[in-house]
Amino acid sequence: MKKLLLTRLAFFAMLGALFFLGSCNVLNPNIMLHAGRNYKYDTLSLDTTIGRELKIGPNDIIEFRLFANDGFKMIDIISSSTGNGASANSLIRQGFDYTVDYQGNVVLPVIGSENLKGMTIRQAEDFLEERFAQYYVHPFVLLKVLNQRVIIFPGEPGKATVLTLNNQNTTLLEALALAGGISAGGKAYNIKLIRQQQNPKLKPKIYKIDLSNIDGITDGNTVLQSNDIIIVEPRRYIATRVLSQITPVVSLITSFITIYYVVKRL
Image (cartoon, rainbow, N blue to C red):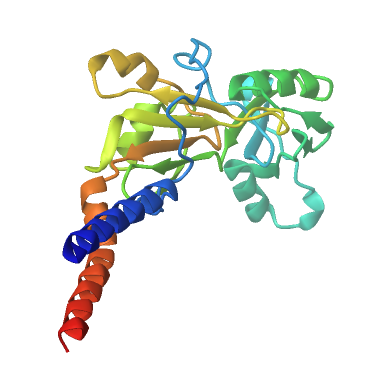
C-alpha cells in the first residue's frame, strides 16, 4: 500500500514539475517577443508591400551632394579658405554626411534646417532642389542614406543579424536571403515583422507573414523600412527540453524512494 502511495506521489510530483516548467516558460527561455495564440496582428496593405520605398527617419545619416545646371557642374560648398584644394575636391566627390535629428530635421549648408522625415529619397531630392533653386541655377541633388538597417532573428537560438539596407527597395525575402535564410529550427509559416511608426509614442505595427507556400510571395515582397525587426518563430522542441528539465527531478525522486527503502530495511 505504501509502495503504491509513493508511486503516486512521484507521478504527481513529475506532473507538477512539468506544469511549473511550462507555465513559467522555463522550457523556452530564449524565445523573444512571443505573441499569444489569440494575438491580433496588423493587416498588410499594398502601401506596406509592393512599391513602397525606404523613408527617411530620425537618426538617419544621409550623404549629400549638390550640383548646378542639372548636374553639369558640382557645387563647391567647402570654404576655399582651407587652402587644401585636393582635400576639398576629394570630399566633394564623396559627398558630405549629415545626421537627421529625432524630429526629422537636418541642417544643410546655405538653406539651413529642413525637415525630411517620412520622405523617400526621391521626394527629399526634389524638395531640396526646389529649396536650392533660390541660390543656384537648376540645382541637382543626390542623397543616400548610409545607416538604415534591420534586425533579423532567423529562428535559431544564438543567431541574429543586423543587416544594412544598401538598396532603397530591399524586400523581406531579399533580407532573409542576405541573412542566410530561415534556419532549420525556424517556422517559415510564422514570421513576425515589427515596424516602428513615425510617431514614437504609437505602438509598433506587427504583421504575421506566412512564407511556407507560394501564396506568401506577395507578403514576402514587402519593402522593408529602417529599424524593422524580423523574427522567425523558432521550433520549441518541447520533448527534448522536457526530458532535459525533468531528468534531474526524476533522478531526485528516485533517489528519495531508494533511500527511503534502504532506511526502512535497516
